[in-house]
Amino acid sequence: MRHAIEIDGLSKHYGPRAVLERFELFVEPGETLAILGASGCGKSTLLRCIAGLVQPDAGTIAVRDELGFVFQEPRLLPWLTVERNVAFAARSDVERARVKDVLELVGLTPAAHLLPKQLSGGMAQRAALARTLVRNPKILLLDEPLSALDALLRLELQTSLAQIVRETGSTAVLVTHDVQEALYLADRIVVLDGAPARGVLELDVPVPLRRSRTADLTDERIALLAALGIEGRVPKRSHRGLRVVAP
Amino acid sequence: MAKRPAALALSLAVPAGLLIAWFLATSLGGVKTYQLASPGDVARELGALWSNGLLWRHLAASIERVLLGFGVALAFAIVLASLVGLSRPIEAALDPTLQAIRSIPSLAWVPLLLLWLGIGENAKVTLIAIGAFFPIYVNLVAGIRNVDRKLVEVGQVLGLGRFELARRVVLPAALPSLLVGARIGLTQAWLFLVAAELLASTRGLGFMLTEGQQIARTDEILTAIVLLALCGKLSESIMRGIEARLLHWTDGLPA
Ligand SMILES: Nc1ncnc2c1ncn2[C@@H]1O[C@H](COP(=O)(O)OP(=O)(O)O)[C@@H](O)[C@H]1O
Ligand SMILES: [Mg+2]
Picture 1 (cartoon, rainbow over the protein chains, first blue to last red):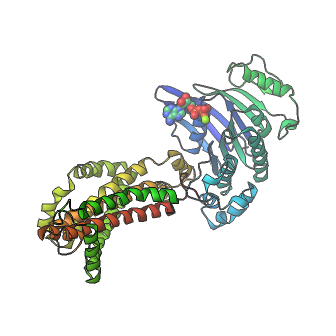
Picture 2: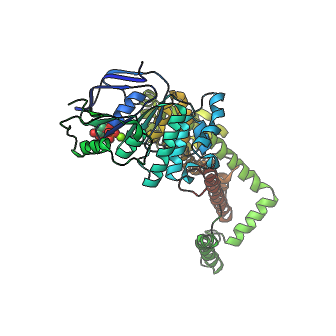
Picture 3: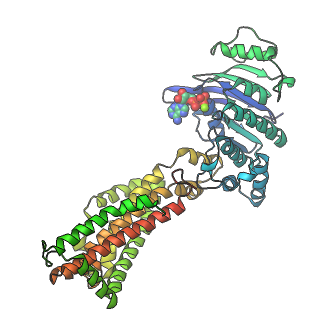
């Protein structure tokens, strides 16, 4: 099967500092991949390279479908209403006709005529999500989209996000620093270690755990949490469903 | 703009005090009329100008010059600032020259303008435009430069080209800076209007000042000054009204 995203030999330096060095990543069509890693390890740089916001020094990035990008902050244009912010991304009459639908999908229909300054953080982030969804991109790049929200709201939006990804059948790459969020939303988790970023751990989230909050801390969760607990060090042995990618 | 009554009363206290002081100074005989006309003289002069139609003639002449000069300045400043703000090569080509021109005290242009354009309307409007241009230009360039890069990235991930980015993200985001520049520019326009009309004119508020001086009529001079103050204040209020209307989306003002 062709990959939705293929990254090979990707390198990016800022001055003498290597953030990405011959980095490799493949994303399957339709999967939700969560990328976990300490702050500053290069997660955003990776996504920004994929989105073309950052020019890599070397390497190839192949993206098979249209991309949508959601930033950590809503980044709404403050002079446009919610509805116009969403319509901002529309390129055709077909997409303009979708504006109302995506507002409905993210639950913002009643707020369509509000200005960004009148929105709560959660509403603003929903609007940003709607703006991305209006083009119906097949691949979503999500750079800590929920990190700025407080805990309850984050849970609520995780649920919305899971539903949207499922309904649209998108491929998603979700950067997060929240292990629970990764376990809840992702089919697969890659843990990065920094400077330069490399995958130190990869986990296929067992099917019963996906989109479920009720599951208690099963072996896999404990294993992952333990692995993350050993600050950046790679666990010596492989757990079930947990394999070391780059020892 | 609706001010609260207390604030309005407070803001009127100082002008009222000045008026009383002026009245007392002239009525108690401390100051001679040929040095300073009394408020009553000024009111009489205003009434006379009103009834013989000269008031409107002078006002209209000045307002027309200010609006023309300001309009020309606004158009040039928007075009040049957009080019300079959006394109590094154009900035490298134009900005040093414009900065050099800006550092020339604008009144130094007067002799040249008189030689080139004569003493007609064109010279006056050009001088006013020069005065109004730079505040608008400088503010808009700074506004474009300071546009939040994060908003620009939103346009970039949506695949907008340079032109679309400028039209849909950068220029709207720079609107507050443009309006601040325009407000300062309009104040400058009034300043340069007086300079232009003092030099050579047969109508206008600046002409009233020169005429008043030549025939030693302080009531006429003070009338012109009062009218200039009112015009300046009025244009400032209008500009602030426009700002409030166009910038209701900024975080500072209530919706
Ligand atoms: N534009 C930039 N210029 C210089 N250094 C940068 C830039 N962007 C990111 N970095 C550096 O690259 C490293 C990785 O950053 P980033 O990808 O944002 O990390 P993460 O998203 O994992 O927190 C950090 O050390 C950061 O300081
Ligand atoms: Mg980041």
